[in-house]
Image: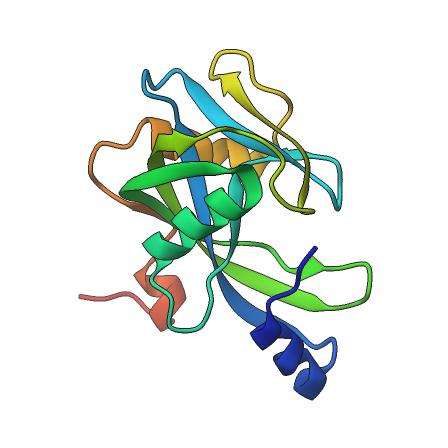
Length: 169
C-alpha cells in the first residue's frame, strides 16, 4: 500500500498515535445501474468499494475520481455525495492508528477498463447488485445508501442531547 507523502511526514512527527484523515469512497455503477465496481484489497483480501485518502487541498470529488482511476483504471463522473460517515478506529499491522471521515460518492463509469491498476488490489471487477461477494457492514451500508440515493446526503447524528449534553427547548 502506498502511503501518501503527507501521512509519512505526519507519522515522522506523531509516531503511531491516532491520525484523523479524510477519505473519498466511490460507489461506481455501470451505465445500466445494475452492476457495481469492487476491488479485492491486497492488505486483507476482502472485497470493498474503491477509495482512498484525500490529499491536502484536494477536492473530495476530485479525490474519488483520482483514486478510482489509480486503483482500477476506470474513469468515473461523480453524481452525488450520498453519505458522510466516520470509520471506527483502525490499527494497521505496523501499529499506526487512524480514523477516517468517509465521504461516499455515487459515481457513473464513463471510460477506462476495469483492471488491477496498482498494488492496493489483487482483483477488480464488476458485480451484479443482486449477486455480490461478501462485503463488510460499512461497505454494505455505503452501497445501499448510494444505490437508493434520493438527493439527500445521509449522515449519522447522535442527537442534540448527546452532542450538547442537554435537551433544547
